[in-house]
Image 1 (cartoon, rainbow, N blue to C red):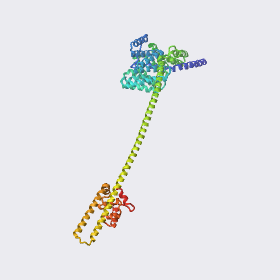
Image 2: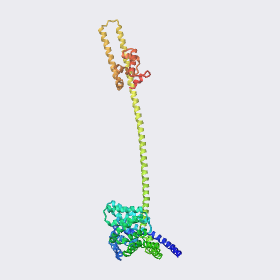
Image 3: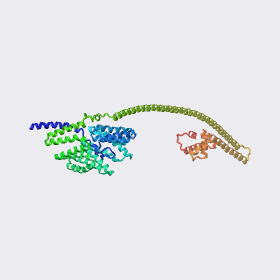
Image 4: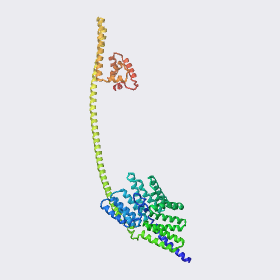
Length: 544
């Protein structure tokens, strides 16, 4: 007997592992608690008529044919909700993607974000976690942009955050689940929402407490919100009773756990909602019966769980083959569009690069031509300037040569004039001597008169010389007086004679002084000019 029970136990463990593998890969569709409406956490479905899906399909066609695409999209989103609650996920998936296709066609960001939120929820079913995160983040990104533009209220994000709360809880990432739940509370409190949404948050918080093994606190919270869900949205009690059963199972109160699991199944059958929970509930009842030693019922419930799992989630199910294959028109069309866009962008990029290259070549050619023209102009200006400078130098040299010749000529005239004055002075001196030594009687008054006329004549001659010297060397006296303000009239006269290269003897005759006096005057002149002993006085005066 013991051997038979042990063998049966091993068989049950094998079947349990097989079914658990299927169930764990197909977490319950809890995202249907908040429907995808403008009030995402309010479930509007209680007892839907049997023909509700047919009625919505008819309304969808009418709206689409009349051109009211926005309302047509909303009908498809509602259809997706209903199909999800009935566990007809292939139809739900098709409705969501139809809504997304139409939303994208009319470029309506608000409806695109709603459709993406629903698609993300459907991807949860088959562990397509990357797709869940991808479409959830895309929906949130679009909505945040619309919020920033003031087109929608921030409370619309509650639906996204609530779905991600459930998603991360199912993936046992409780830290992230709690983070998104806190965001739901924060937005709800900020906009003063009523207890409708907070009841869903409170229920979710009780599940978090249960996963944190705070079982008593979780049960208290679930019992508190149970009354609200009974009166408002009883179909959500499927989730609440399931987790209440889990809570009592953790306390080893199997009888009470079994009661809540049966209540959950009864709620599913009553409201035809959350049928995807049936495999989970049957598997958990099987576990309770096994732990109680009722292996017969344990096997029966385990078989039922396996059958339901295959029917609802398995790829062999006729309901879900279209969903598993993901052969939808939207994806194929979007992929084709993306490929076409990529090809167009690539072609535009190549064309842009060609145009850019051509522009750069033209620009480079223009720059090269400008540089060459500038170099030629500079070269031409340099040659022109060089030629003009050379011509100017030649003209200046010719003019200087002419000026020098004129100056030399005039200086020669001055020198001749000065020599004539010297000869005249000598002649006068001889005359004076002759008159003085003459024995003939000449009166004293006649002699004085002759001397007086000679002196006047000498003074006039010197003034004429000075005037002629100044006309030839007009700036000499001015520059010399400016350089040496202390020079006297006699110093200037001596300087003029020295500039004409007169000898000391000639200077002495012209000035009527002795040679020694000329040397003394020259010494004093050098001293006034601060000339060194080695400095040539003639060369120095030639500079002025």
